[in-house]
Length: 245
Image 1: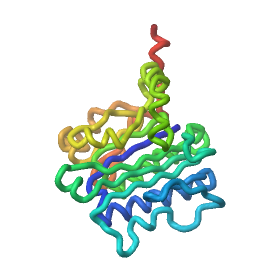
Image 2 (image 1 turned 120 degrees about the vertical axis):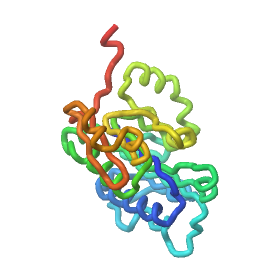
Image 3 (image 1 turned 135 degrees about the vertical axis):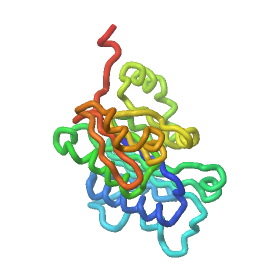
Image 4 (image 1 turned 60 degrees about the horizontal axis):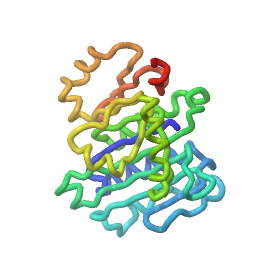
C-alpha cells in the first residue's frame, strides 16, 4: 500500500487528541465504505455497516475524559478483523507520565491503495501534508510499505516473507511504529519518497533555505507550521537489488 507514519509529542493532551480526531475523520471521509472494521479504544474490533456518519474518534476528546491516560485506535478494510488491508488508519497516544518523564512519542499511521497514484495522484501526499499541518510532528515518512495484520500475534508468522521482500526492495517501508517510537526520540527512522522533518531536525540542517539549496530536482519541499515535507519525485520507487546482480 501507500503507507505513512507520523511521530509526535504529547499525544495524551486534549489538543493532540482533537487533532487526531480531525485526521481520522478526514481519512474516513476519503476511504468511505472501504473501511469495514473499527477498534475504538479497548472494546475490540467492531464490524462497520454503511457509510461513515459520526466522528470516528469523538471519544478521544469527550467531556470527562482522563487526559492523563493513553489511547489506541485502529480502522481497516479487511474482510476479517485480523486481515491486513490497504485501507488502514491506526494510532497510539502515550500516557501523560510516559510523555513527560520518558519523552515517549505517539503516532498515527494510514494507508491507501497504490492504484491511487494513478487515479488520485495528489491524494496521499496531500493528506499527509494536511496531517502534518495539524499534528506538527517531530518526523515521519511515507511511500510504498507493507501493511501488517492488526492482530500483533499474527504479524510474527510472516517475518521471513517480510524480511526477504525488504532485502530485495530497498524502497519498501517496513513499519512497526509501536516499537519504532521507543527508539526514535532522538533520531529519525530514515528517508523515503515522502520524508517529514520537524523544526528540530530542520534547524540541524541549517533551516529551510539551506535544505532547499541542497535538494536536486525533481525533489520538492513543502513547508508546514513546525517543519517540512520533502517529496523525492512524482512517485515512490520500490527498487530491486536483484536487477543489478
